[in-house]
View 1 (spheres, rainbow, N blue to C red):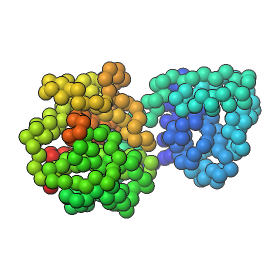
View 2: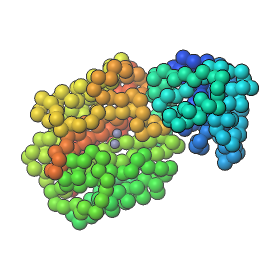
View 3: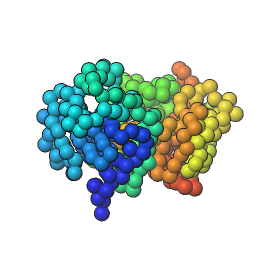
View 4: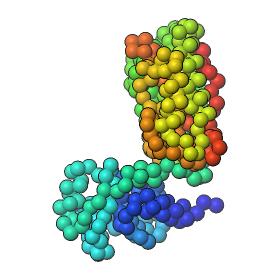
Length: 358
Ligand code: ZN
Ligand code: ZN
């Protein structure tokens, strides 16, 4: 049985440990959801040593009381004024805030509304608030992956000469939504031919042609949790150069996954994938980080990129997605999701069968 009160209390304790402040203002919507269960927007969460107050505007008052338990709900007309009145009532003089979530404009508004309160940017460790997933969260992520992968299986018969990238994206999105996705993790990337060399290609009117690589980077959202996976198809047979590059990316991907375990630095996973591609003369074509955490946001801590010293911990869910991109020609990316464990990792996405030739 999943006891929400226990779960949210534990999350709040972690927040207090990471934040190193007695009183906190949380306005990042994803963090508010994580800490309270409230899924609406435009709220503010005030956290004290043993209390939480959720401030919402009139559109969300009912929703907030339905979605949360044991939290005082306060309705505001102007957010900064609502925050000010609670702080005054509680006699709070020092308030930590998420420096990455509060815009400069909002900061000025808060400063004006709170002339007697000292605003203190919180530790950047707060990025790691949601990094460790509990069993329930891992379950939601697995469900999101299952919905997405089922949709991709159904899409295969559509990938053939003449179909446009936009058609492929629409068909895939429709199947994910029909399959139970509450949303899509991001705008689906369905790229073909030279467009596969653009890591964040926007599906357009280009028609798939014989000999093309087709790259699909996609994900489904289930109960707020995201999946993120990239698969490569080849319409017909790949050229020897394409096959060689593909095998190198796959080997970099496999080596990175084999190195994942608790206690390894995130930057080390990136280094392993990158150095393998460098040794194969492909280093300069690998133009992004090796992976990222996935959860209530599709991109969250930790980052598996060059020089990151943060250590992997059991319970983190990360992607591994090396790629190489030859502008004007083609690109390759292979992306899977893994759950970090004490002595290795569990690959959550369905084990890769190699380059799919259609
Ligand atoms: Zn992706
Ligand atoms: Zn990704």
